[in-house]
Length: 388
Image 1 (cartoon, rainbow, N blue to C red):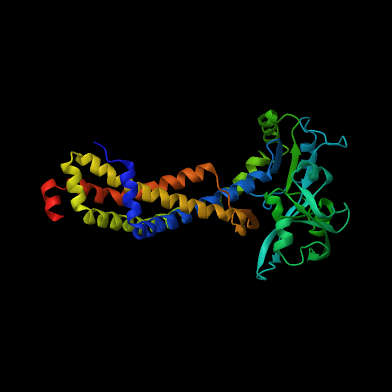
Image 2 (tube, rainbow, N blue to C red):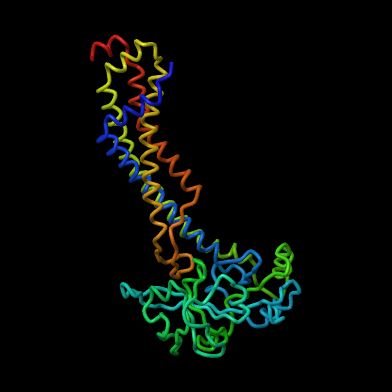
């Protein structure tokens, strides 16, 4: 005979206070666990959205970031001669030679400085990133000291808003526009004319060369051609893969730290569930004896108490996930220690995170309920009835 599920659920509702407190403790742990995973997923989503699968970025061999890279003009000309490069709306090749530099700017809220990416782009560079669109003001005029700021930079840093001016590279640069890059990493950059940036920062080499492939399936062939050319010391990557790699270090750190904290917190939640279930067993000794006398097996008693504990975990898990889902409305900004630049991103709740969080909650319920359930199942009928 099996103990009805309705009976198990009624036992939880009969002890409202202890049920709420135990489920609340589990919910708090699941909330921490879920928000950490959402943080990591949000960072990865932001960086992956920065690149396109059909765009190729070429940097100096062994460079980890664009800031570390340098590609001279002769190498850029060789790259531009590739026949696999697509043509833009003006008939010219969709290729952009871009200098990338880090500068220090104070934040609006705290005044504390942080590194911000300054990117020099060309008209082709703008066409290569169709996800970027001006939401305030206008695009900068090529050949001038005008710049446009990503939405996150305009909102988060002093003197980076529309109509304001930034001073760097011994020049004043007027912000004539604010752009939105669809929650990608470009939202955390400042863009200006590539040649003006080269002159201002007194650079002789570009940081990267970006181009669009006519046929994305030709990437491996193009990569082999570039990396086998003895005149070049470069490495080619799909733009989507390149930016995804930029988040791996920080995302891994967030995962390790968050999971470690969640495991520590979960110990307290498991102990709370265990105490609750032991108290339940102690208060229902006579009930357990009656169930055994009616013919319910030890296995049925074990399963009933385990299911009760699992239901506690499920309720706590669902509550924790719901609370964590509200974090999606928030955006945060931090330094990506792989690129040493400020990056803004939002929490992202994915189906995989929901499943992982629920499994984590059920695991806490199982661990917290197993020993009390085993104790209930081991009770002898006579002893249980006598204790009642």
